[in-house]
Image 1 (cartoon, helix red, strand yellow):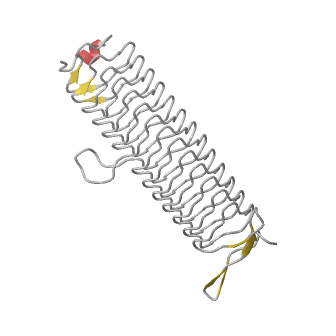
Image 2: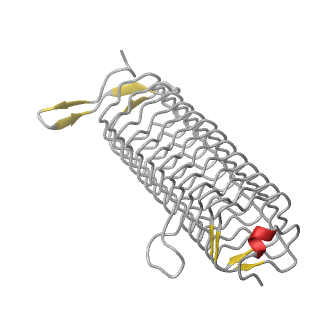
Length: 321
């Protein structure tokens, strides 16, 4: 059936097949092919060699692209809802505004790919290589990024409510050290998401929404959470050395067992936050609100409390300034 046959390998040679485009013209599946608007719904394209192909506006919904080579392909505005991109190569591919709802990208390589304004709700990116990916203003409620590599990625202003980023790598190296920068996550909505044990070193989380987000055991050294909203977030056992959280909203957040040396909470709202069993070393609470905050069994070397409000006696027991 035209438009539904596999790309086959015969005697080591790629066999191209003709398909009917939406305009009725005959097109071939091959590297660099012009497949704009092609109807490939449900097609078996596993292992297809489509590097550099133009699939703008194509219908790939439910298609099987397992192991396909789509490096530098144009996939703008495609409908790939429910498509299978497992193990596919999508380095530098352009998926701007693509509908990738419930698509599977497990173990795929999306290095430096563009997914701006893409729809990735309930999509599966587990173990995917996504270093340097540009995914701003994407919509990914319930998406799975578990153990994905997102170092130096740009996810600014995207929505990942209830998404799973457990053990994902969104970090880089600390300031002053060589290595990739952390992910750009400014204004991104992670409400209720699982970011436990995630690498967020040097990540830019300015104005991010982390309401009730699970960040237990996360590595967050040098991360910038300034003006973020993290009410009810769980930072238990997180490594937050040198974190910047200027004017952040963190009411009711848990920092139990966290390490916060040289962290800066200046002007932050920490009302009702739990800092039990937390280690403080030159931690800055200048002008912060500590009303009803809990500081049981803490280790205080030095804290800065200038103009801080509602400071509990246990915290003042350290060498405060």
